[in-house]
Amino acid sequence: MTEDSGIAGDGHDTAAEREPSWRAQSIGLAAVDTDDAELLHGWRSDPVTAYEIGIWPRSVTAMRERIERDMDDDDRDDFVVLLPDGTPVGHTALSAQNIVNGTAQVELMLAPEHRGCGHGTHALDALVDLAFGELPLYRLTAETHTGNAPALAVLARSGFVHEGVSRAACLHRGRRLDLAVFSLLRPEWEGLSRPRAWDA
Image 1 (cartoon, rainbow, N blue to C red):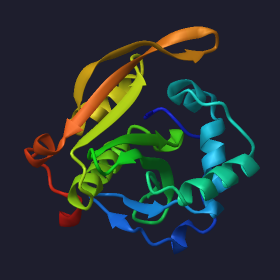
Image 2 (tube, rainbow, N blue to C red):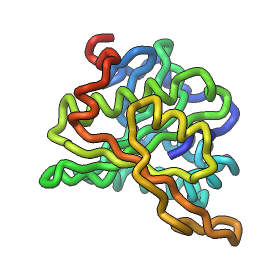
Image 3 (spheres, one colour):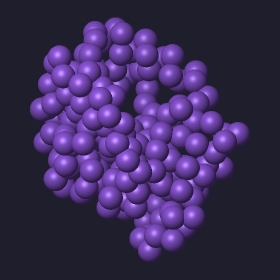
Image 4 (cartoon, one colour):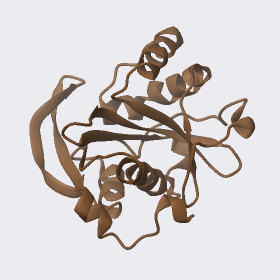
């Protein structure tokens, strides 16, 4: 997960035509489609993104194939984060969903020109409300590098609890990096005083 991710650029040709499938305080979530391949590829190709979420940028074709594969995966839901005017500002996902155990992992990536505006917190809150308000999930987890201060702050603002550190869990540029592990349980979400996405 990263708050420090993305690419310069103004987005998506069909952004204004998109209808969010889930609305929240200041953003909407629209299901990722194959037409988003270039947009997501651009964000993931940014060096900061590659560092923070530990990915190896691949081709647009590979991104499109991945989207198509993920669309058939019942254990994953991917969304483009949209502003009210339809501008795409990031990507978020519920991955590794296990309905039997009620668990899933959250992912978040923002474009650099839209960082520091609160969109990350609102997007994560919206995703959490979807996970607990519409799905029978009980535990959400997130991981990010221990030095990724913006992502750590977003997780804390959204109510996630720091569980510990996975030592040397990621290899990047020849160095082993630690990952901070966070979680949010349904009772903790129920105790949050903030408005829910459906109250927006």
